Amino acid sequence: MAHRPAARLSINGQSYDFQGDPRRTLLDFLRLDAGLTGTKKGCDHGQCGACTVMVNGRRINSCLSLAVMHDSDDITTIEGLGTPEALSTLQRAFVAHDGFQCGYCTPGQICSAQAMIAEIRDGWPSAVTADPAITPTISDTEIRERMSGNLCRCGAYDNIVAAIREAMATEEAAQ
Image (cartoon, rainbow, N blue to C red; front, side, top):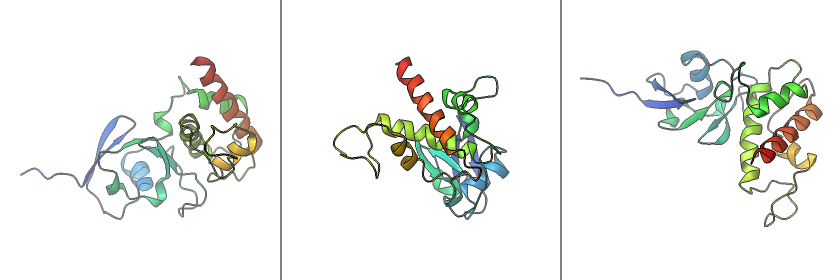
């Protein structure tokens, strides 16, 4: 008799079966079982954002989530956003604006920014949105607030904000 996996995860469009320890985090499953090492283990406590991935379009800290919880979810990691040969708009903007220095936080920053852009497009307010009933003006303060869960030890924040602004403008111009 065939044994059904505890969970079947869709990661970057590929199916992965999970049958391991139900306490295994999504982060460890991505890195150790799926071989997707772009997602980084920073603090392992949900405080730095280096492990940010998107689940069903929403950003999460994969170190705080169990792999078994994501049966049938659509998970996107940095590897699912672009390739070295075909960078995403956001990845190109990060390169153009030097939105990384050591690069350790960059995968989480880019995944978080990708989801943040979708949140803005969908009209979600943030803690600094003046009037939640009105589509927010996307100021640097607004971007910084929305990205506050992703830390950069090198302090490349100005460049990260510039990269996000460029990516948003490029996507707007393409629409």
